[in-house]
Length: 255
Ligand SMILES: [Zn+2]
Image 1 (tube, helix red, strand yellow):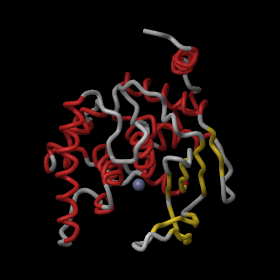
Image 2: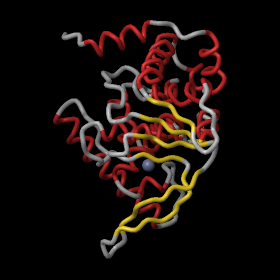
Image 3: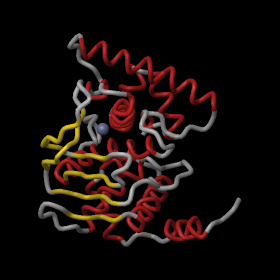
Image 4: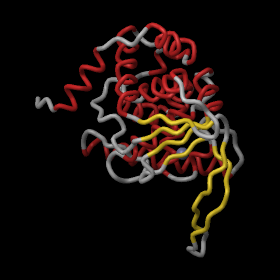
């Protein structure tokens, strides 16, 4: 194995224990933390520590950036990194946090191919070339506080960042082998189609119908459901659960 300066610095950061008050913030703000094994808790805080060091956290719209906000974001994002080789969301530089839903001017493309700017109220947002994630703090806090409602803004936006790592926004993160790419494409394609059919028919779905938008949103929504409604996902969509279990190297239905 080649140890670069970067990987040595990260290993050193992961090994430094976080101060007690940081542990307490994560325990209080993120109840799912208490369900993890002792080893996973330590690994998660180590990853969070690297994110806190390497990413620029910025308050906007009057939000004063503070440890509680930084830790609640970083610890949830770190859940996506457990047990895997990671380069810590390399396309991401900044995490910008507003107190609540914010209005962003969004560039959209209509059916005639014309790009327009329009104001849209958002809770969170990221884009491949933006190099930033924008989040609403009230939604970040609520998502962490209820780990079983199927919605988690931080997991959603950081799952998009995992998708970007291989250079394309297509709902397929970097996978280990050709066989995994093929089975991922098959399962994700079938599940996205099934979600579209159910959403069109107005049937209730376990996955948020927003995931029917495109493969990238499907992966982000499926990630939220995987971590937050693991047992139901495993029972009702066993193949989807299995693909995500292999990718994330975690089995949250057993937590
Ligand atoms: Zn999204």
